[in-house]
Image (cartoon, rainbow, N blue to C red; front, side):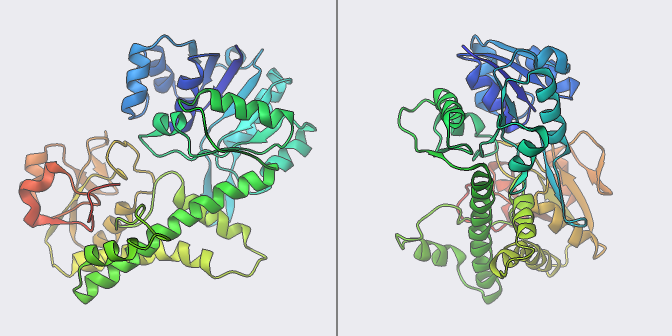
Length: 389
């Protein structure tokens, strides 16, 4: 049994902590008192049905705290899963939460292997190794879906660790021990290559989302059937289904910031595709907003700000960009979002009564279909073809 500290209680950190605490002693460190209180009460601090079930029903060797002194000393492994973000105005990737977590771990448990799960710029791990004069810092990219983090850790598509030596193999074995499957591809790489894998993988997914969104834009403006075209294209075995359901654009925790970070890494390298992937997301929101405005609605209802079903995250959700474009034209907007505690969102009223919301607006904008709005289907504007995320 190892002593493991998980820093950060988002989707990644929570999944890691719960699954590893089945076999190891896990301490969770976070700066949010509400999240710590939720774990202590055996409740999930974020929306994830499987996480809620595990916390409520399983015996876990798990302890959560706000205090680094209680979380870090004596740890064999420290997993850092704190949030990072990219600032396009300053062309700067904010890794301050990871920086401080590494510093605390090196000070309080200097013998621990530090595993970074946060998204970071290419070359970051190598810089941290040089700064702290240690080879105990590794990067291991995560490939989890919001609301499915537990499932994707139990059934990983691959495990990648940025260290080709004994430490890398130990961490790969640790991560594999949390899985429910025996066979899983494991790849040990250099640290910088592992960082690049994460950014290139997410940029490719953003490219695929953008491609099918632009296909849908073409079909919508030409009066064609998007569904027929998408189905026909995806019958090609080299293309296949998956990430082909049109939306208002890509969003969430990873794709917007990862594509912009990828573009920043190309500052001195000729490219055109990466820039197009970033620009395509804005173009798609323009097309969607124009289509809504063309209907001349007096009052538009935004049904849910969250990215998809089973998630309570609306960070960088594409519908927000559409909403802002509509409001810029002077159209009144109200929002239905149960996950919001505030009474307004970007100056728009938040309505919590769904029936009143449906009656008060003459057009409902929804990134994804749901049974909750099928009774007013004639009011709904969506580009969701296949009713999946």
